[in-house]
Image (cartoon, rainbow, N blue to C red; front, side, top):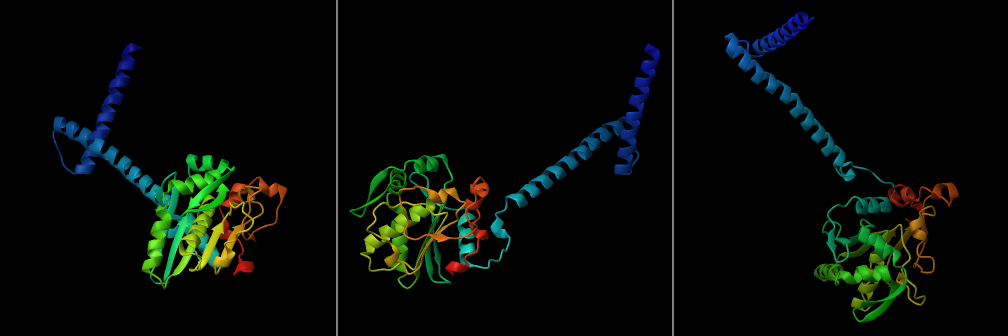
Amino acid sequence: MKNSKSVCKITLLFFFVSCLGFISCETTNSVVSSSENTENTIQEELEALNEPEIQIESTIQADQTVQNEPETEEKRTFEFKDQEVFYNIKYTYDYEVVGRDLDYKIIVNDEDKEIVIQYEETDSEEDWKNNYLFLLWPLNLDGHIVWTTHGYARIYKSSQNKPINDFYQQVKEHPDYKIIIRGWSLGSAMAKITARHFVIRTGGEVLIDELTTFGDVKCWLNPFFSIKKYCKRIREYVTENDLVTWCVPFYRRDVTCKVGEKFNFLKVKNSENYHTHYEDYDYSDWE
């Protein structure tokens, strides 16, 4: 038995080496000595075995790159303007971050003659903490006190007025451009506070051309002030199955622009989906 096992091992070893030699000869298309052939074969086989791994890895990386490309690369078309507005807020990836994770971006559009400041949604643990701080809190805007939630006041104050200062500077440099303020979710509160700050800073003499928010959260308690008369166009979009827009119950918004499906207990459990897909709703009532 031992002899037969040894013979089998030797036969298998000889077969393996012979295969390597055959593959090496087919690859190099040359005749070498048996010792050189074995050495070259091993080296070439290692290279041959490694090449597919590299190719596979490169293919995987390429596939991942395609998958990770922002969806904005797809040239989507929209029936309504505000679908595209939301889509662009959602798929902007180069927000500037200041203070307690306040994400904002200023866009100067020379072609359409617009200056846009937009704010991102909740995207960090810090943001969630501030969402839960809903006690009434004073916020000083250029010496004027406005009342909002503790969390929203804390985020806005932490920016040390950098977003509004940058935005206001661009407005002064482009006096004939439209003034546009936008936000989504937590960013809707930041957008509305920015709009109020802009009114205070300009003494209400410069109208805001557009204030648009999506997944709008309530952030005002003072019932005697409305930003509506300082905006040429104001839209605070909510959809009834988006529970985020129900917060905070005893605060208010200036307008309520309903889109999407009517409230349904079965659909509310999928509230996150409704909150993140404002690009899919019908805005015909608000065009």
